[in-house]
Image 1 (tube, one colour):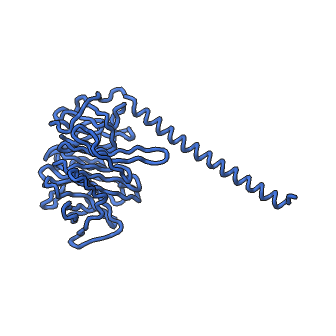
Image 2 (cartoon, one colour; image 1 turned 135 degrees about the vertical axis):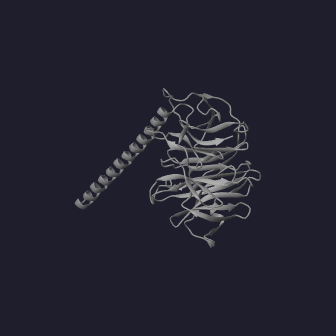
Image 3 (cartoon, helix red, strand yellow; image 1 turned 30 degrees about the horizontal axis):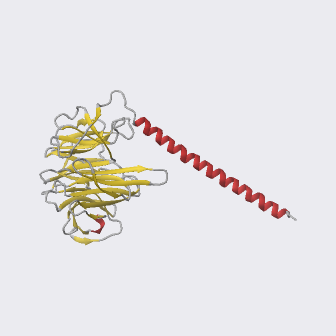
Length: 349
């Protein structure tokens, strides 16, 4: 015989089950809607737009001379593809390959392509080591979202940085992981956090150490990078053979070494706690900083096109997810100049 208390318990249980099923269905519908919305945005971005740059499929080799490679950010079927234009005529029609990346860099016939393939259940992030014909030599899983990539001038060393939590350097909570690969031996250093740190002349160790934005010197040993600890960023000079880094200056992010090895271009946070950066050049012999003429916030690791000019990406006005490449003189004079519309991740060959 069913008592009144039992009927009340059964009614309460059915009510809770109904609420649970309803919540599950709502979440499932929300997730499906988000996936479909993202797919719709991707489909629109993959459609060519009138007035956009001329892009044609073609072959690219990394041992070509006087070419500028980059990731095509223009809407159309070749969006995010590795592309190139003549260095002397960057506004001309671009040749796009079949290879698509989130970040890309190349030097001396060696390329690195960081890919991010978001899925419903997981992200499939990976680094592709490329030969001069853009063929994949090795594939490495990435622990997070691609952020920065570099190749040493000789092509021997490759570095990449990923976000393992958070989405950007402006996030309140973020962590990065920077790896370096020796392409001759295929020895991978999974994290620069295993290197010994000297901060302000003293050995230093802390649980909050993060590195990002590696740039290589031509000696196949020296590199520069950003070290973050105790809410401060530092420029560090590192040695691959000794597995050490030493701090040189504060408030330096995403350094890029000049071809002559005497200066680094970098982004400097201009307001504490904000995502506002200005581009500077630091003389390594004197540590004197020169502010460049670009006045927009540059959230990028600049690239030297030569010893006098740096290039960097800025968001395209009014276009979410798109960017343009700009240049500015490295001595603080002149004005910014649009180099390539709808592009990012430049690498001069």
